[in-house]
Length: 489
Image (cartoon, rainbow, N blue to C red; front, side, top):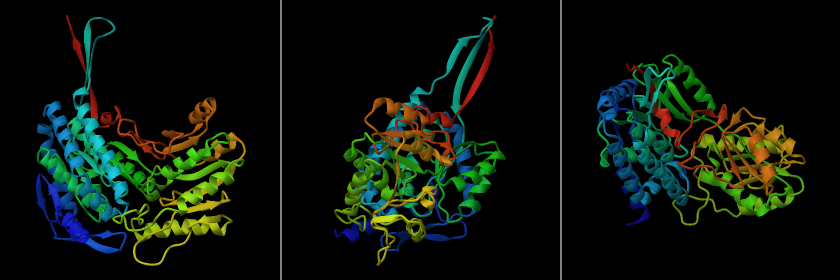
Protein backbone atom coordinates (compact mmCIF):
# COMPACT_ATOMS: atom_id res chain seq x y z
CA UNK A 1 0.00 0.00 0.00
CA UNK A 2 1.40 3.39 -0.96
CA UNK A 3 2.05 5.85 1.83
CA UNK A 4 -0.69 8.17 0.58
CA UNK A 5 -3.15 5.26 0.62
CA UNK A 6 -2.13 4.42 4.18
CA UNK A 7 -2.60 8.03 5.22
CA UNK A 8 -6.07 8.11 3.68
CA UNK A 9 -7.03 4.85 5.39
CA UNK A 10 -5.92 6.16 8.79
CA UNK A 11 -7.98 9.32 8.29
CA UNK A 12 -11.02 7.45 6.96
CA UNK A 13 -11.12 5.06 9.92
CA UNK A 14 -11.46 7.82 12.51
CA UNK A 15 -14.88 8.76 13.86
CA UNK A 16 -15.86 12.19 12.52
CA UNK A 17 -18.99 12.78 14.59
CA UNK A 18 -19.75 13.74 18.17
CA UNK A 19 -19.57 10.88 20.68
CA UNK A 20 -22.43 11.31 23.14
CA UNK A 21 -23.72 8.57 25.42
CA UNK A 22 -21.90 5.94 23.40
CA UNK A 23 -23.47 6.98 20.09
CA UNK A 24 -21.83 8.78 17.20
CA UNK A 25 -23.98 11.61 15.91
CA UNK A 26 -23.83 14.65 13.66
CA UNK A 27 -24.06 18.16 15.03
CA UNK A 28 -27.70 19.19 15.51
CA UNK A 29 -27.51 21.69 12.68
CA UNK A 30 -25.35 19.44 10.50
CA UNK A 31 -22.40 21.83 10.57
CA UNK A 32 -18.80 20.64 10.20
CA UNK A 33 -15.35 22.20 10.24
CA UNK A 34 -12.16 21.21 8.47
CA UNK A 35 -8.95 19.71 9.83
CA UNK A 36 -5.80 20.69 7.93
CA UNK A 37 -2.48 19.05 7.25
CA UNK A 38 -0.10 21.81 8.44
CA UNK A 39 2.69 20.55 6.19
CA UNK A 40 0.64 21.33 3.07
CA UNK A 41 -2.28 23.49 4.21
CA UNK A 42 -4.61 20.98 2.54
CA UNK A 43 -7.80 19.60 4.05
CA UNK A 44 -7.56 16.19 5.70
CA UNK A 45 -11.25 15.80 6.54
CA UNK A 46 -14.27 17.46 8.14
CA UNK A 47 -15.57 16.73 11.63
CA UNK A 48 -18.82 17.59 13.38
CA UNK A 49 -19.06 21.19 14.60
CA UNK A 50 -21.05 21.01 17.83
CA UNK A 51 -23.62 23.57 18.90
CA UNK A 52 -24.39 24.59 22.49
CA UNK A 53 -27.29 22.12 22.38
CA UNK A 54 -24.86 19.33 21.51
CA UNK A 55 -22.62 20.31 24.39
CA UNK A 56 -25.56 20.15 26.78
CA UNK A 57 -26.54 16.73 25.41
CA UNK A 58 -23.02 15.52 26.21
CA UNK A 59 -23.37 16.81 29.76
CA UNK A 60 -26.76 15.10 30.07
CA UNK A 61 -25.10 11.81 29.10
CA UNK A 62 -22.22 12.30 31.55
CA UNK A 63 -24.59 13.20 34.39
CA UNK A 64 -26.79 10.19 33.69
CA UNK A 65 -23.82 7.82 33.67
CA UNK A 66 -22.20 9.23 36.85
CA UNK A 67 -24.03 7.20 39.57
CA UNK A 68 -23.39 3.79 38.03
CA UNK A 69 -19.82 4.66 37.05
CA UNK A 70 -18.99 5.92 40.54
CA UNK A 71 -20.31 2.61 41.92
CA UNK A 72 -18.13 0.54 39.57
CA UNK A 73 -15.49 -1.46 41.40
CA UNK A 74 -12.06 0.22 41.48
CA UNK A 75 -10.41 -2.90 40.10
CA UNK A 76 -12.78 -2.90 37.12
CA UNK A 77 -11.99 0.74 36.37
CA UNK A 78 -8.31 -0.10 36.59
CA UNK A 79 -8.63 -3.03 34.20
CA UNK A 80 -10.30 -0.81 31.61
CA UNK A 81 -7.37 1.59 31.83
CA UNK A 82 -4.90 -1.26 31.60
CA UNK A 83 -6.58 -2.63 28.48
CA UNK A 84 -6.60 0.85 26.96
CA UNK A 85 -2.88 1.19 27.71
CA UNK A 86 -2.21 -2.05 25.87
CA UNK A 87 -4.37 -1.10 22.87
CA UNK A 88 -2.74 2.33 22.53
CA UNK A 89 0.68 0.71 22.70
CA UNK A 90 -0.23 -1.94 20.12
CA UNK A 91 -1.55 0.67 17.71
CA UNK A 92 1.21 3.20 18.16
CA UNK A 93 2.13 3.28 14.48
CA UNK A 94 -1.33 4.17 13.19
CA UNK A 95 -1.99 6.67 16.00
CA UNK A 96 1.39 8.29 15.36
CA UNK A 97 0.62 8.70 11.68
CA UNK A 98 -2.76 10.23 12.48
CA UNK A 99 -1.16 12.63 14.96
CA UNK A 100 1.57 13.66 12.52
CA UNK A 101 -0.97 14.31 9.78
CA UNK A 102 -3.11 16.67 11.87
CA UNK A 103 -0.44 18.28 14.07
CA UNK A 104 2.73 18.17 11.95
CA UNK A 105 5.38 16.76 14.28
CA UNK A 106 7.74 14.09 12.86
CA UNK A 107 6.64 10.48 13.24
CA UNK A 108 9.42 9.75 15.72
CA UNK A 109 8.12 12.50 18.00
CA UNK A 110 4.54 11.30 17.61
CA UNK A 111 5.59 7.80 18.67
CA UNK A 112 7.43 9.23 21.65
CA UNK A 113 4.28 11.09 22.68
CA UNK A 114 2.24 7.91 22.42
CA UNK A 115 4.64 6.11 24.77
CA UNK A 116 4.35 9.00 27.23
CA UNK A 117 0.59 9.30 26.82
CA UNK A 118 -0.10 5.59 27.30
CA UNK A 119 1.87 5.65 30.53
CA UNK A 120 -0.83 7.79 32.16
CA UNK A 121 -3.32 4.98 31.58
CA UNK A 122 -0.94 2.42 33.06
CA UNK A 123 -0.08 4.66 36.02
CA UNK A 124 -3.69 5.45 36.92
CA UNK A 125 -4.80 1.86 36.33
CA UNK A 126 -2.63 1.10 39.35
CA UNK A 127 -3.97 4.04 41.38
CA UNK A 128 -7.63 2.98 41.27
CA UNK A 129 -7.19 0.54 44.15
CA UNK A 130 -5.09 2.95 46.20
CA UNK A 131 -7.71 5.62 46.87
CA UNK A 132 -7.34 5.70 50.63
CA UNK A 133 -9.38 6.94 53.59
CA UNK A 134 -8.74 7.33 57.30
CA UNK A 135 -10.17 5.96 60.53
CA UNK A 136 -9.16 7.16 63.95
CA UNK A 137 -10.34 7.73 67.50
CA UNK A 138 -11.10 11.39 68.14
CA UNK A 139 -9.17 13.39 70.71
CA UNK A 140 -11.64 12.85 73.55
CA UNK A 141 -11.95 9.14 72.98
CA UNK A 142 -15.75 9.34 72.79
CA UNK A 143 -16.10 9.11 69.04
CA UNK A 144 -14.53 8.13 65.77
CA UNK A 145 -13.45 10.05 62.68
CA UNK A 146 -14.02 8.48 59.26
CA UNK A 147 -12.51 10.24 56.24
CA UNK A 148 -13.37 8.99 52.77
CA UNK A 149 -12.59 10.12 49.22
CA UNK A 150 -15.32 9.96 46.60
CA UNK A 151 -15.54 10.86 42.89
CA UNK A 152 -16.09 14.56 42.42
CA UNK A 153 -18.61 13.94 39.63
CA UNK A 154 -18.94 14.94 35.96
CA UNK A 155 -15.83 16.70 34.65
CA UNK A 156 -15.22 19.03 31.73
CA UNK A 157 -11.84 18.48 30.08
CA UNK A 158 -10.45 20.94 27.52
CA UNK A 159 -7.24 19.85 25.77
CA UNK A 160 -4.73 21.71 23.55
CA UNK A 161 -3.46 20.93 20.07
CA UNK A 162 0.26 20.51 20.77
CA UNK A 163 0.16 17.11 22.52
CA UNK A 164 -3.18 15.79 21.28
CA UNK A 165 -2.92 12.35 22.92
CA UNK A 166 -0.90 12.99 26.09
CA UNK A 167 -2.97 15.96 27.20
CA UNK A 168 -6.02 13.75 26.84
CA UNK A 169 -4.73 10.70 28.70
CA UNK A 170 -3.28 12.91 31.46
CA UNK A 171 -6.83 14.08 32.25
CA UNK A 172 -8.92 11.06 31.22
CA UNK A 173 -6.74 8.56 33.11
CA UNK A 174 -7.25 9.96 36.63
CA UNK A 175 -10.91 10.77 35.94
CA UNK A 176 -11.61 7.15 35.01
CA UNK A 177 -9.57 5.91 37.96
CA UNK A 178 -11.47 8.13 40.40
CA UNK A 179 -14.90 7.16 39.04
CA UNK A 180 -15.80 10.40 37.24
CA UNK A 181 -17.66 10.79 33.96
CA UNK A 182 -16.44 13.32 31.41
CA UNK A 183 -17.15 15.68 28.57
CA UNK A 184 -13.95 16.33 26.64
CA UNK A 185 -13.45 19.10 24.09
CA UNK A 186 -10.30 18.53 22.01
CA UNK A 187 -8.58 21.38 20.20
CA UNK A 188 -10.19 22.28 16.90
CA UNK A 189 -6.83 22.07 15.14
CA UNK A 190 -6.20 18.47 16.24
CA UNK A 191 -9.45 16.67 17.13
CA UNK A 192 -8.77 13.38 15.34
CA UNK A 193 -6.38 11.87 17.88
CA UNK A 194 -8.87 12.22 20.76
CA UNK A 195 -11.66 10.79 18.60
CA UNK A 196 -9.40 7.80 17.91
CA UNK A 197 -8.65 7.47 21.62
CA UNK A 198 -12.37 7.49 22.46
CA UNK A 199 -12.90 4.54 20.11
CA UNK A 200 -10.05 2.68 21.79
CA UNK A 201 -11.49 3.31 25.26
CA UNK A 202 -14.87 1.99 24.14
CA UNK A 203 -13.14 -1.11 22.81
CA UNK A 204 -11.37 -1.47 26.17
CA UNK A 205 -14.77 -1.64 27.87
CA UNK A 206 -15.46 1.92 29.00
CA UNK A 207 -19.26 2.14 29.48
CA UNK A 208 -21.40 4.43 27.34
CA UNK A 209 -21.64 7.97 28.63
CA UNK A 210 -18.50 7.90 30.75
CA UNK A 211 -16.48 9.72 28.06
CA UNK A 212 -18.31 12.09 25.73
CA UNK A 213 -16.41 13.88 22.96
CA UNK A 214 -17.53 17.27 21.66
CA UNK A 215 -15.67 18.76 18.70
CA UNK A 216 -16.45 22.37 17.90
CA UNK A 217 -15.06 25.49 16.28
CA UNK A 218 -16.97 27.65 18.80
CA UNK A 219 -15.34 26.65 22.07
CA UNK A 220 -16.59 29.58 24.14
CA UNK A 221 -20.21 29.32 23.02
CA UNK A 222 -20.36 25.57 23.56
CA UNK A 223 -18.31 25.27 26.75
CA UNK A 224 -19.47 28.26 28.79
CA UNK A 225 -23.02 26.92 29.33
CA UNK A 226 -21.52 23.67 30.64
CA UNK A 227 -19.20 25.50 33.01
CA UNK A 228 -22.13 27.50 34.36
CA UNK A 229 -24.32 24.39 34.71
CA UNK A 230 -24.34 23.08 38.27
CA UNK A 231 -23.90 19.47 37.18
CA UNK A 232 -20.28 19.96 36.11
CA UNK A 233 -18.18 19.59 39.25
CA UNK A 234 -14.66 20.00 37.90
CA UNK A 235 -12.92 21.77 35.01
CA UNK A 236 -9.49 20.76 33.76
CA UNK A 237 -7.90 22.96 31.10
CA UNK A 238 -4.56 23.03 29.34
CA UNK A 239 -3.83 26.08 27.23
CA UNK A 240 -2.93 29.74 27.36
CA UNK A 241 -2.97 31.80 30.54
CA UNK A 242 -5.26 34.33 28.85
CA UNK A 243 -7.96 31.72 28.20
CA UNK A 244 -7.33 30.11 31.58
CA UNK A 245 -8.14 33.37 33.36
CA UNK A 246 -11.50 33.61 31.58
CA UNK A 247 -12.36 30.01 32.44
CA UNK A 248 -11.50 30.59 36.10
CA UNK A 249 -13.84 33.59 36.12
CA UNK A 250 -16.64 31.51 34.61
CA UNK A 251 -15.92 28.66 37.05
CA UNK A 252 -16.31 30.98 40.05
CA UNK A 253 -20.07 31.15 39.56
CA UNK A 254 -20.48 27.46 40.47
CA UNK A 255 -17.31 27.37 42.63
CA UNK A 256 -15.94 24.63 40.40
CA UNK A 257 -12.84 22.73 41.33
CA UNK A 258 -10.33 23.63 38.64
CA UNK A 259 -6.96 22.45 37.48
CA UNK A 260 -5.16 24.66 35.00
CA UNK A 261 -1.94 23.96 33.12
CA UNK A 262 -1.29 27.32 31.50
CA UNK A 263 1.47 29.21 29.72
CA UNK A 264 5.19 28.94 30.24
CA UNK A 265 8.26 31.07 29.68
CA UNK A 266 10.92 28.60 30.75
CA UNK A 267 14.44 29.85 31.52
CA UNK A 268 17.41 27.60 30.72
CA UNK A 269 20.32 28.60 32.98
CA UNK A 270 23.83 27.36 32.14
CA UNK A 271 26.36 28.10 34.87
CA UNK A 272 30.07 28.63 34.29
CA UNK A 273 30.96 25.17 35.64
CA UNK A 274 28.42 23.30 33.48
CA UNK A 275 29.43 20.58 31.04
CA UNK A 276 28.80 22.49 27.79
CA UNK A 277 28.20 19.42 25.65
CA UNK A 278 25.64 18.08 28.12
CA UNK A 279 24.01 21.50 28.33
CA UNK A 280 23.73 21.70 24.54
CA UNK A 281 22.23 18.20 24.41
CA UNK A 282 19.73 19.21 27.08
CA UNK A 283 18.98 22.45 25.27
CA UNK A 284 18.16 20.55 22.10
CA UNK A 285 15.63 18.47 23.98
CA UNK A 286 14.18 21.33 26.01
CA UNK A 287 13.92 23.61 22.98
CA UNK A 288 13.20 21.35 20.03
CA UNK A 289 10.87 18.74 21.52
CA UNK A 290 7.59 19.08 19.66
CA UNK A 291 9.13 21.71 17.33
CA UNK A 292 9.28 24.07 20.31
CA UNK A 293 5.48 24.03 20.52
CA UNK A 294 5.37 23.08 24.19
CA UNK A 295 4.62 24.98 27.37
CA UNK A 296 7.71 23.32 28.84
CA UNK A 297 9.95 24.46 25.98
CA UNK A 298 13.04 26.43 26.96
CA UNK A 299 12.19 30.00 26.02
CA UNK A 300 15.12 32.05 27.36
CA UNK A 301 18.71 30.80 27.49
CA UNK A 302 20.87 32.44 30.17
CA UNK A 303 24.46 31.32 29.63
CA UNK A 304 27.47 32.42 31.66
CA UNK A 305 29.65 34.80 29.69
CA UNK A 306 32.73 32.56 30.07
CA UNK A 307 31.13 29.74 28.06
CA UNK A 308 28.51 31.63 26.05
CA UNK A 309 30.36 31.57 22.73
CA UNK A 310 31.17 27.86 22.96
CA UNK A 311 27.58 27.05 23.91
CA UNK A 312 26.17 29.25 21.14
CA UNK A 313 28.45 27.79 18.50
CA UNK A 314 27.64 24.19 19.39
CA UNK A 315 23.91 24.84 19.69
CA UNK A 316 23.95 26.65 16.34
CA UNK A 317 25.65 23.69 14.68
CA UNK A 318 23.17 21.22 16.12
CA UNK A 319 20.08 23.27 15.25
CA UNK A 320 21.37 24.30 11.85
CA UNK A 321 21.88 20.65 10.87
CA UNK A 322 18.30 19.61 11.64
CA UNK A 323 16.28 18.48 8.65
CA UNK A 324 13.01 20.35 8.10
CA UNK A 325 10.13 18.75 6.21
CA UNK A 326 6.84 16.91 6.30
CA UNK A 327 6.69 14.79 9.42
CA UNK A 328 5.91 11.61 7.48
CA UNK A 329 9.18 11.77 5.54
CA UNK A 330 12.10 9.64 6.69
CA UNK A 331 14.86 11.53 8.47
CA UNK A 332 12.81 14.68 9.10
CA UNK A 333 13.49 16.15 12.54
CA UNK A 334 11.47 19.38 12.35
CA UNK A 335 7.94 19.48 11.02
CA UNK A 336 5.72 22.50 10.34
CA UNK A 337 4.16 24.68 12.98
CA UNK A 338 0.51 23.92 13.49
CA UNK A 339 -1.02 26.84 11.56
CA UNK A 340 -0.18 30.02 9.71
CA UNK A 341 -0.98 32.27 12.67
CA UNK A 342 1.45 30.37 14.87
CA UNK A 343 4.23 30.63 12.30
CA UNK A 344 3.55 34.33 11.80
CA UNK A 345 3.79 34.97 15.53
CA UNK A 346 7.16 33.20 15.74
CA UNK A 347 8.47 35.16 12.75
CA UNK A 348 7.22 38.40 14.30
CA UNK A 349 9.05 37.74 17.58
CA UNK A 350 12.29 36.94 15.75
CA UNK A 351 12.02 40.04 13.56
CA UNK A 352 11.42 42.18 16.65
CA UNK A 353 14.53 40.79 18.36
CA UNK A 354 16.69 41.34 15.27
CA UNK A 355 15.46 44.91 14.87
CA UNK A 356 16.51 45.53 18.47
CA UNK A 357 20.02 44.17 17.94
CA UNK A 358 19.92 40.35 18.17
CA UNK A 359 22.24 38.47 15.81
CA UNK A 360 20.86 35.52 13.81
CA UNK A 361 23.33 32.62 14.00
CA UNK A 362 21.12 30.20 12.03
CA UNK A 363 17.59 30.26 10.60
CA UNK A 364 15.50 33.36 11.10
CA UNK A 365 13.58 33.47 7.81
CA UNK A 366 10.25 32.00 6.70
CA UNK A 367 10.92 29.55 3.86
CA UNK A 368 8.97 29.68 0.61
CA UNK A 369 6.54 26.97 -0.41
CA UNK A 370 3.51 25.24 1.06
CA UNK A 371 3.04 24.45 4.72
CA UNK A 372 3.66 26.38 7.92
CA UNK A 373 7.39 25.76 8.31
CA UNK A 374 9.88 27.81 10.30
CA UNK A 375 13.55 26.82 10.52
CA UNK A 376 15.40 26.11 13.79
CA UNK A 377 16.77 29.49 14.80
CA UNK A 378 19.48 30.62 17.21
CA UNK A 379 19.74 34.28 18.22
CA UNK A 380 22.80 35.68 20.00
CA UNK A 381 23.31 39.02 21.77
CA UNK A 382 19.59 39.26 22.43
CA UNK A 383 18.62 42.47 24.25
CA UNK A 384 16.30 42.21 27.24
CA UNK A 385 13.96 44.65 25.51
CA UNK A 386 13.09 42.05 22.86
CA UNK A 387 9.52 40.79 23.11
CA UNK A 388 10.64 37.16 23.22
CA UNK A 389 12.32 37.88 26.55
CA UNK A 390 8.79 38.17 27.99
CA UNK A 391 6.48 36.36 25.57
CA UNK A 392 6.18 32.62 25.05
CA UNK A 393 7.65 31.76 21.64
CA UNK A 394 6.04 28.36 20.97
CA UNK A 395 8.39 27.65 18.09
CA UNK A 396 11.93 26.48 17.23
CA UNK A 397 13.75 29.64 18.32
CA UNK A 398 16.53 29.81 20.94
CA UNK A 399 17.38 33.34 22.15
CA UNK A 400 20.63 33.51 24.12
CA UNK A 401 21.34 36.03 26.88
CA UNK A 402 24.52 36.16 28.97
CA UNK A 403 25.24 36.70 32.67
CA UNK A 404 28.26 36.88 34.95
CA UNK A 405 26.74 36.38 38.41
CA UNK A 406 24.38 33.62 39.52
CA UNK A 407 22.16 36.15 41.27
CA UNK A 408 21.65 38.01 38.01
CA UNK A 409 20.70 34.80 36.19
CA UNK A 410 18.16 33.79 38.83
CA UNK A 411 16.71 37.29 38.93
CA UNK A 412 16.26 37.26 35.16
CA UNK A 413 14.91 33.72 35.16
CA UNK A 414 12.23 34.65 37.71
CA UNK A 415 11.34 37.95 36.02
CA UNK A 416 8.14 36.63 34.46
CA UNK A 417 4.50 36.10 35.40
CA UNK A 418 4.96 32.44 34.50
CA UNK A 419 6.45 29.66 36.60
CA UNK A 420 5.91 26.30 34.94
CA UNK A 421 9.40 24.87 34.50
CA UNK A 422 13.01 26.01 34.73
CA UNK A 423 16.18 24.28 33.54
CA UNK A 424 19.53 24.47 35.33
CA UNK A 425 22.94 23.13 34.36
CA UNK A 426 25.79 23.04 36.88
CA UNK A 427 28.24 20.42 38.15
CA UNK A 428 28.39 21.93 41.64
CA UNK A 429 26.02 20.13 44.01
CA UNK A 430 25.66 23.02 46.45
CA UNK A 431 24.95 25.46 43.63
CA UNK A 432 22.44 23.02 42.14
CA UNK A 433 20.47 22.81 45.39
CA UNK A 434 20.73 26.51 46.16
CA UNK A 435 19.63 27.71 42.73
CA UNK A 436 16.93 25.04 42.30
CA UNK A 437 15.35 26.29 45.53
CA UNK A 438 15.42 29.88 44.28
CA UNK A 439 13.89 29.23 40.86
CA UNK A 440 10.21 30.18 40.94
CA UNK A 441 8.74 27.25 39.05
CA UNK A 442 6.69 24.17 39.76
CA UNK A 443 9.29 21.95 38.07
CA UNK A 444 13.05 22.12 37.60
CA UNK A 445 15.06 20.14 35.08
CA UNK A 446 18.42 19.78 36.80
CA UNK A 447 21.06 18.78 34.26
CA UNK A 448 18.36 17.33 32.04
CA UNK A 449 16.20 18.77 29.29
CA UNK A 450 12.91 17.00 29.99
CA UNK A 451 10.71 17.01 33.09
CA UNK A 452 7.58 15.21 31.83
CA UNK A 453 6.89 11.98 33.71
CA UNK A 454 3.55 10.24 34.30
CA UNK A 455 4.62 9.42 37.84
CA UNK A 456 5.47 13.02 38.77
CA UNK A 457 3.23 16.00 39.70
CA UNK A 458 3.16 18.20 36.59
CA UNK A 459 2.14 21.82 37.15
CA UNK A 460 3.32 25.36 37.70
CA UNK A 461 3.54 28.33 40.01
CA UNK A 462 2.25 31.86 39.53
CA UNK A 463 0.22 32.32 36.34
CA UNK A 464 1.30 28.98 34.91
CA UNK A 465 -1.62 27.26 36.55
CA UNK A 466 -3.41 25.60 39.43
CA UNK A 467 -3.27 22.02 40.64
CA UNK A 468 -1.17 19.11 39.43
CA UNK A 469 -1.51 16.37 36.84
CA UNK A 470 0.20 13.00 37.11
CA UNK A 471 1.92 11.32 40.01
CA UNK A 472 0.25 10.16 43.19
CA UNK A 473 -1.41 13.58 43.60
CA UNK A 474 -2.97 13.56 40.12
CA UNK A 475 -6.00 11.53 41.14
CA UNK A 476 -6.70 13.85 44.09
CA UNK A 477 -7.87 16.49 41.60
CA UNK A 478 -10.84 14.22 40.79
CA UNK A 479 -11.84 13.32 44.34
CA UNK A 480 -13.86 15.00 47.08
CA UNK A 481 -13.09 14.47 50.77
CA UNK A 482 -15.93 13.57 53.10
CA UNK A 483 -15.60 13.46 56.89
CA UNK A 484 -18.05 11.45 58.99
CA UNK A 485 -18.19 12.12 62.73
CA UNK A 486 -19.35 9.13 64.76
CA UNK A 487 -20.34 8.83 68.40
CA UNK A 488 -19.26 5.60 70.09
CA UNK A 489 -20.77 4.91 73.51
